[in-house]
Length: 369
Image 1 (cartoon, rainbow, N blue to C red):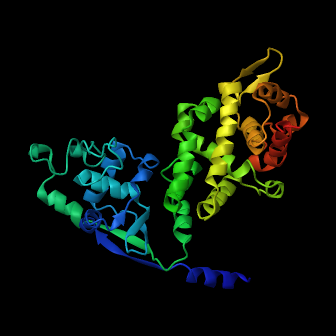
Image 2 (image 1 turned 90 degrees about the horizontal axis):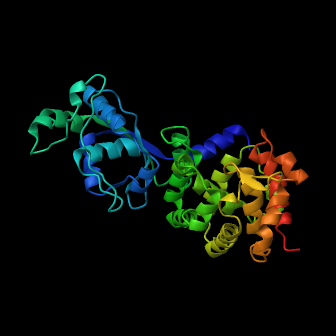
């Protein structure tokens, strides 16, 4: 199809509108439950108290605020695509933000000193028992009358447009990792699949085997490892050979496809996952994906993704006919002297290059025959 035809066709699939709204109107939308800010996303998007304070400072000073992007659902409610932290900061500050669960604290303690308004320190929206540290009525009205534009992806648009928009607006932005963006997309597309993945990531056997650092847990790397397992453990050989240049983009694209499937066999995924990590935990524990040193017969160091790609995916592929658990240590140790593994697991080899070799290797090593 010629370029202009592609442009014209795709533009017809995207219907948008935009206009300015006062913060008071944004508050009213939330109070009337006419906007969904996806409180689940709070675990991935998190401003510091200082960032929240500088945002309130910007409103008071009349500094233009970037527009909020929303998608209009069939029932007329707006789904927030981009702008969660701005809106939740406002709702939290004025005291109307609803917690996602009983443990979540949505109380706004007080503003901090900022560059241009150091007297903001300790200020609250309206505390009847602490008038000296409350904003005045004039200051509250100044905030409520400030404008924030809205860009609306209308319900007539192609169904995938809002997820594409969400990904493009948030990748490389205020959240740290591609998996955090994927988690948010998944919550929008298929919360049941997200809950399945979260449940798998929370399995004690899995956590024991991967033994990640606190930082990697904070970056949701455990969820990325679950996604890699789900997408690769039984993938056909031909598609493994044609991953393309960027595995991160592959993970996102295939996750979205999986999220909209009507016939996803979640029980098959759970059986393979539990069978794999229950066996590994029993046989290897936190040595499962560490480097093996034959000279002193020890596993050393931290988690290695290349080892995970061979071991977890190989055992998962054969989960219906597994090797005996007592054979696992010997087979895992053999990987580290395997020439294919040595060649395709070294530094500088990205996942797209190594996976076509490492996944078949794991399937062979952990084959029952």
